[in-house]
Length: 165
Image (cartoon, rainbow, N blue to C red; front, side, top):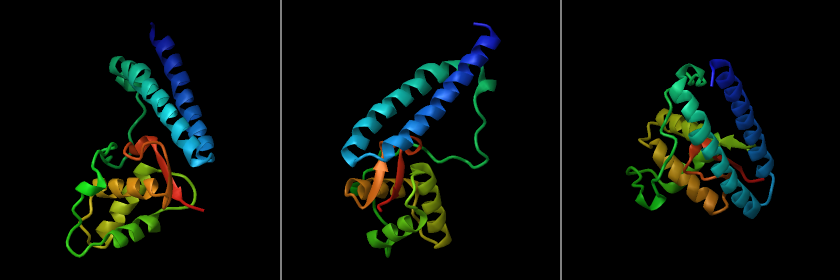
């Protein structure tokens, strides 16, 4: 493949990523069972697109990879389960939930954005709560239907959350 072909393919793949993000938003309007089923399928498609198509292009042509944001990213996949979390002394689940709810909206937001905002709010309050604790709590809140979530909440860039109506 010549450079022009690679650039053209990359542009089409990035357009496909944008279309899949729009599909994720459309799926977000479905009932929970349908959101979970289709969201899981969509996660597989997005993962394959990124890992099997885009990454090989970026390995050969790193200059084509979209620039990162100015902010240092958090780790975007969290395997920490809520039952493994040890909250600091004096911090309750209810306090943490209030912080999380305070940074959420009734519109869909990337889980990564909510985690970042909640961690920033905890820092403002002087609470030693890290990003993985927030993510683990978001998963519990979604699984218990206290908030709505789409995608695997443990994968922050491939999931979204919102307040329940």
